[in-house]
Length: 208
Length: 208
DNA sequence: CGCATATTTGATTAATCTCAATAGGGGTGG
DNA sequence: CCACCCCTATTGAGATTAATCAAATATGCG
Image (cartoon, rainbow over all chains, first blue to last red; front, side):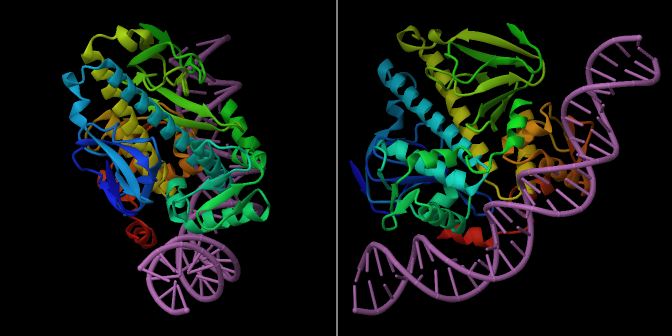
């Protein structure tokens, strides 16, 4: 069991991938830095998530702690090649990887939304699903607005304005900086699916 | 060995995932339809690629043939659970899945680029890498501009304009509708990395 | 309690999206 | 083999959105 302080790096993009980590407590961000210095957040990791499954030789992204975290560390070679006799173990890893893949595709769909409203609404719903709570829930959002922006491929200003707007219309309510209460979940769902300015054109495309 | 005509669907999002396919010949597109009818292309598949590895119960996306294709079909249950005694087989599947994951992350980075120029340049370089050829190569792009647009999260008009602009500046040359010659690869690389309008601001963010 | 930092807010600019119309290919049938 | 036609792609002008630049304001931490 290992602990990291907020802001600390667990591993870096390009490091030899010698370990797999399971998140016991806390939240982390996984990201890559593009050639020109921009940061792309590939995902957020929470309790129960596993880091470093999908790599072979070297890590594909950097992982940093957002909050203080506790991790369980496993040597990769225990899972690899002939040494992993236990078929159950392999099966589980495979299963994890499928989950990770599904998450990546969900994020792709999220980023591919047109308007800022749709993206932020989709993000909040994704976080809600991850935290698996109920309507009228209060979301815990340990990441900064900049993290959210880099995750959704937007600027921090647009994220902030969108959240302010949603709060103004009573769909959500901000509680401090790192909590958001979802007041009208169905309105949020409608927004996330492009409920406001229906794009008949895109639908035409889809059917073409 | 099975053949599909251009435009034909191999399987649909939500179908029970009973088979895995290997592409022997041709090009396909994998996509999801969002709630409001928009289409998000998750990837293009070519000779040697494998479809349907990363799913457990049901396919996560629809796959259609862009050109006439030939596929090799395998029953999923041959790879699953205890029945797959061969550790090599499992290892290979795992390896495939890691590749798929890496591709998904690369696409995420591609979509997350700011300008249309960067996206299209990045796309062309990705296609070049996929086709693994040399400088001054001629890319084969069987997909339509709409496919490219739905892949890069842009409109078809912007894709068209960007390609026209790149051709006008002598970086590429269009050869018919489905071929593009890369004339200045390094210029393309520079564009893909944000070489034109450097975003000092984003760099600042990345370091923050 | 005060400071450093994250966030919000404002004004402006620049880009893409949208709507619209034209041009160009490529495939088909005569 | 050629001409025609349909569909894709290109081009144009204007509307809309988010990015950018700049400044003020909270918030949470030490």
